[in-house]
Image (cartoon, rainbow, N blue to C red; front, side, top):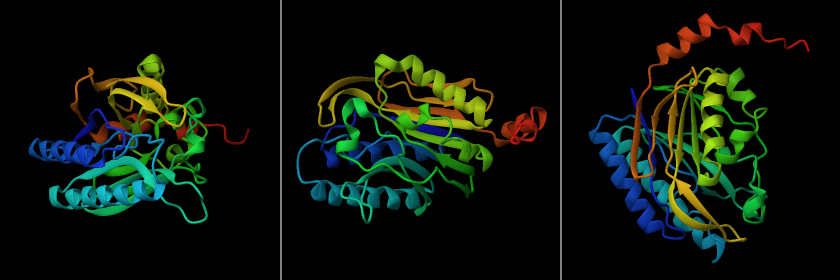
Amino acid sequence: MRAAAFQFDVRRGDVAANLAAVERGLRVAAERGIELVVLPEMWPTSFVADGDPREWQRETDAALARVQELSRELGQVVAGSASGASAGCALPRNRLTVFERGERVLAYDKLHLFSPTAEAESFSAGDELPPTVATRLGRIAGVVCYDLRFGLALRAPFLEEAEILVVPAQWPASRAAHWRALVCGRAAELQAFVVAANRTGIDLVGRRRLELVFAGNSLIAGPDGVPLAEGQGQDGLVVGEIELARVRALRRAVPVRDDERRDL
């Protein structure tokens, strides 16, 4: 199958413009026979510091509902993170959602909030490890951006034998080397494909209004940790071929799960 990370310049607070960009990207992906599309972190709004959070949530929910409709119409699996309300939490969650042909099959709240941009002042952290779900495309799990740095959280997809890890992100260009190393390293560690979508553009992020430049270096890595496709800074689809037989063959040849010393 064909998978893609859709990278674009997420306009802070402009839900209509961001949704229009995503709709165009999903339709182009469908025309090209792409079955799995991963969107950037906080794609409807980016990290908005001002305004009524309830108003942003209403607009975000409407944008997510439209993407859910498009997933059904286009027959795609679509993943990305956005603000999500949670009962008992004063602040929303940074929530990864996966739609499969119009059905929400996975929801995961970002566990690790990025302190340099004061993300914890705008969001509540998740409290559950990333789940793995069976889809028609394979076993899919996901984490959000900064989560990539925390290997213990990724033990859950490893033990649940995820075959594809999706990663929406807003990862700055100043740490591009870390991004590439972590995406490829997690692919090798999980013996799984990783489809990681990173935005383009420049933005003032979070309540601290930290100016960040984003490289548009979305990445698709194979289960051996080798990059299959990589963004070069332009808006658009970064496309790679995913063949799950490679995952299964590698796991037979190098049986990491069987060899692990869990008694220690």
